[in-house]
Amino acid sequence: MLRFRPVYAAVLLSCSLHAAVFPADSYVSAIEQDRAKSNMMMRGPEGPFAFVARLHPKPGISSLGRDPANDLVLPVEKAPAHVGKIDWQGERAVLRLEPGVTAVVDGKQVTSIEVSSSPAHLKIGEMTLNLSFRDSKLVVSVNDADALKGKKMNPAAWFPVNPAYRITADWVPFAEPKTIRIPDTDGGSRMWKVPGYASFVIDGKKLTLQSVLSPDGKDMTFFFRDRTAGHETYGAGRFLDADLPKNGKVILDFNQAYNPSCAFNHLYICPIPPEENHLSIRIPAGALKYVFAEQVQ
Image (cartoon, rainbow, N blue to C red; front, side, top):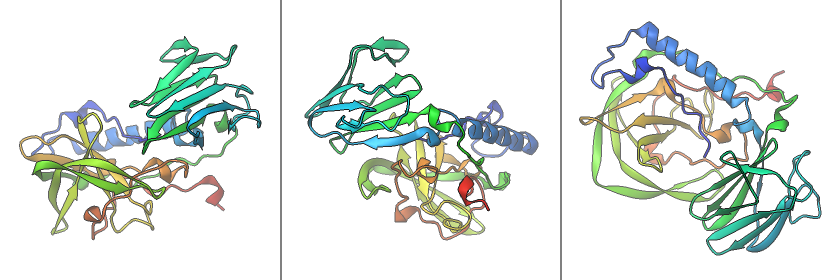
């Protein structure tokens, strides 16, 4: 799941959990600067518009390349006609490259790459291949930086920054973290660890949001949907990242709420906010619905 989590300036990181002790102007400026950086990233080679294909090998050996004779055809104009062969056996797969194909992993040239429990990433020219297992099935995702050339991309848009939507919520942990299944936009689902929920008040209404832990357990994400969804914001809902609770409190800064990657490119698979996180109010903060260039008259 590709995310554009903002990396905010130090002025935000030094904020107290109990009060907004920072200057409002500095807070607004920090978020606006980061939004500009996010826009640049979104429209770059690591952004969602460079994602051009998701390929599904079959167990056994599959050939991979631009040539239509391959089992897995790469829709990338400058890709090698024959990249190599994927040998998928059980929970392990190996991509062995054809002689003469120059590929790089973590800055080092390789002739093969293996994927098992952890994803593998391989760069060939301006193309990146990401190999991973999803529900015990191998998936090859293809990114092509050249696909961005000449492509019209509108910048993302947000509600105006409003410090009132930076909320110090009470954190209510579960006695034991729960593991729940959350549906995805492709009709599948995944298991997520839920450590507890945030309890807070907006406009006099008491609300709760359950979080999920990041894979490394170092932070949390809230998948939520509010009354702006489908009109002002992305229909499926938005995401909000947060630091782990401290002293029974967690900061929910809805000015940092962002669109999932599938809001920009249907090839992505994103979790859908569970019903427990459907809010009965409008939260006019954070990312607005993305408007594609072809939708502008």
